Image (cartoon, rainbow, N blue to C red; front, top):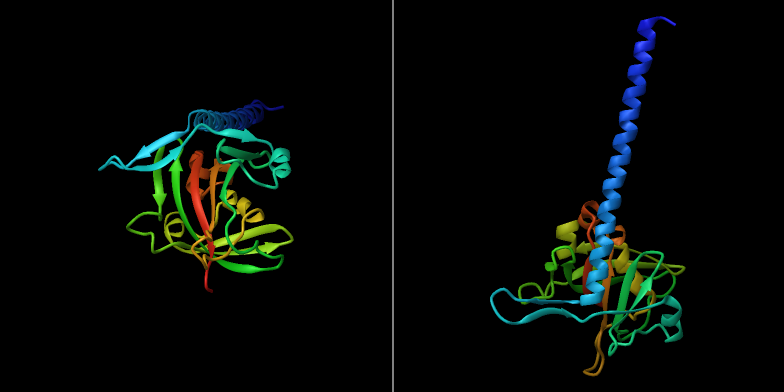
Length: 230
């Protein structure tokens, strides 16, 4: 074979090898970020967190060390988590941890039903151990996030219509937010002794909003859900 052709083939081989090496480096970099994320989640579970207001001594979020239970134990407990022991169930397929604080008034979304759901939430970035976004405060508590949620044979899909999550991250609802809909009731408070559904979630980047997914960090959420009028 002519020397020039050999040189060209060798050059192509070197370029292809460079692309392969770069691809491996990128993959390793993502793998390292995911491992750091898992370590942050483990630390949060073991230690919990206490976040106070900057301008006062008021507690904004307090999470005690968490006791993790399996899905089998969760089901054996009638799909409940023991609040006194601060239990969270781990859904292994998604890596999401959930605590049901209140199952809520009303009933679960029926098969084939699409409903307007109002959500009030606080989002904590576990990497910085700080509140990242929230609509559950004096400034925006009267403006909940509005979602449309559909149940199709037990698979839930949802979109944000308006609100803080919509403003920050767009219309796509994090996959981690959809897990509670299989277990909580979506109704409205019609009497003083009724309360709307409330959950706490630890959501890894793979099940999170677009910024968490892109920058590989986990979030903790405290969320209430209630049925909208629409």
